[in-house]
Amino acid sequence: MTLPGSTSSSLTAAAGWWVVPTNARRPGAQHPGAQHPGAGHHVLILGGTRDARQLAEALAAQGLRVTFALHKPTGAVPPPSGCSLHLGSFGGEEGLADFIRAQGVTQWVNALHPHAATMQARTIKLAPAVGLPFHRLERPLWQPGAGDRWSRHDSVEALIAGVARIGPPAHGKPETATVTAAAAATATDAATDTDTDTDTDTDTDTDTGARRHRLLLTVGPQSLADFLPLTGPGIEAALFTRRFDSARGEAFDHLVTWIDGSPDPDLATETALIEAHRITALVTKNSGGPRPAKLDAAATAGLPVFLLNPPRLAGPAYSRWSDISDAVLAVADLR
Image (tube, rainbow, N blue to C red; front, side, top):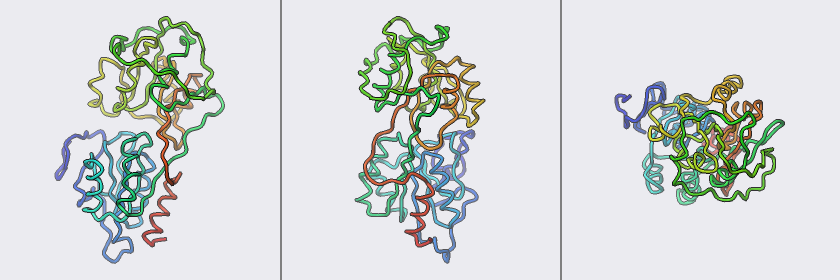
C-alpha cells in the first residue's frame, strides 16, 4: 500500500506501517513548540524491538523530536506513535553518518534487534566519529528454568550440529512434511559443535539413519537460508516457520511450511500451534528481554530447544529501555 508522500511502496496494509520523509511525521505526531524545552533535541532511534518502540513513544511524549528507524517492518512490533519514521537502509556507514548530520540529530540510540550483527557493529564503530551522545540497549538474554531442555550456540553451524545429534522424536517418526532433503543437498556440512552448554537433556543415539524431526524455526524469513542445512542429510527435518506477511519468503515456499502470523503472547495458543503441527523441537534466536510464550510452550511439551546466541559486543550498554530514556532526558536537560 502506497500512501501520499510515501518514500516506499514495499509495505503491506497488514504491517500497519506509514512511511514518511524524515522531515514529515506520521499522522498524530506533533512537533514540539519552539518554547518547549525539548524543541531543540532530535533523537534517532535505530529500532527492531518492542523496547525500541516503547522508548520512542516515551521520548516523544516528553516533547522531543524522535525519528524511529527500521530496516524492515515487522508485524510483531507496531510502529510508534508521535515519531517520524525512516524505513530502509541508510546506505552504509557513511550514509548513516550523513543522515545524522543532515537531520540535526543531537542524540542517537542503538535499540536494534540483538541479532542485527552488521548494523550493531556499525553503530559501535561509528559512535566515536559521530561525536554525539550514543546509547545502546542490550537486553539480558533468556535463561533456562525448570522444565527447559535448552542448548545454546554461538554460531548457526554449531546449532545445526547440535540438532543433528539428537535422536528420533520420542513419539515416533512423523509423516513426511513439505520439506525435502534434496532441497539442501548441496549445503555445507555442519561444523562440530564446541559449545559447552550441558543443560539440554537430548538423546545421544549415534544412529545416523533417517530422522524426521519437525522443527518450529522462529528465526525470521531473512535468516532462513542460513538454516536450510537442517533439511539436509543427517537431519532431514521438516521446517515450520512464521511470517507476518505472506509476500515475504516466497523463494522458500518449496522448502518450508509457512505459518502466517506473529508470535502469540498466549501460552495456550503457542502450545496449540506446537500440537497442531506435531513439532518435535524448537529452533530460535536468543533475543533477550521478556521470556516469550513459545519457550514456555516448548517446556510444557517437553521439547528440546536450540538457541542461537547474539554476537558479543564490547562497550557500555543499558539493560532496560527506561534507563536509556532517563539518560536521553538527562542529556537534554529535561531531568
